[in-house]
Length: 226
Ligand code: SAH
Image (tube, rainbow, N blue to C red; front, side):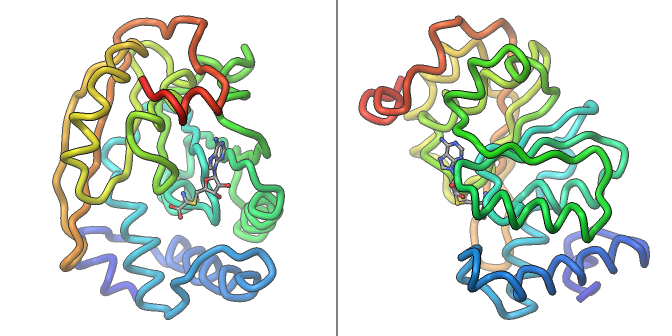
């Protein structure tokens, strides 16, 4: 499986490769019980989950990272395997997903990695988490305009929100207002490809504090996006 990583310029030592192997085994073992992923074939998991999660690795700057809607651990678990020294918080609203993530963290012996079961729009109001992170990552959770209101409250001024997207062009223009209203600007749009699939990493940088009225309640965020 190493070859798949190498093809994308990702070179890992034996210890990290073993962690990915163990992660794959846990995904398969618990997939039925926890309903984590539709992709189970080994090469596909290595490509569409592991390598895809690592496509954003160069955007992970600073020491503290939060993943919103981590699900089965993407992109945060692969990023954590790569970045042993950074601290990670994985957030998901579903208790079952959180239970799986705790098992992965334990079995892979990942240090400074915590799981919080809760909703982003509630945690983002809590002073314990608000504007406390250097980087927020998120993949496959919501359209970018909605996702910005979930994620941007967590990042410090100077920090960044790194959104993992497919073909993001229409989402980016739709999110322009939300990005500005939440105190941010687009820093970089990186278009990548994972074989035939188009992938886009949108790096959004915080330039001023997010007003305390955000995030609004989830019903309003979804019904009336910024
Ligand atoms: N990021 C993972 C999972 C995507 S599925 C991946 O790329 O594979 C979306 C996940 O987001 C689900 O596990 C769901 O429980 C979680 N989620 C959706 N809305 C959320 C919210 N407002 N707060 C926290 N988690 C949320």
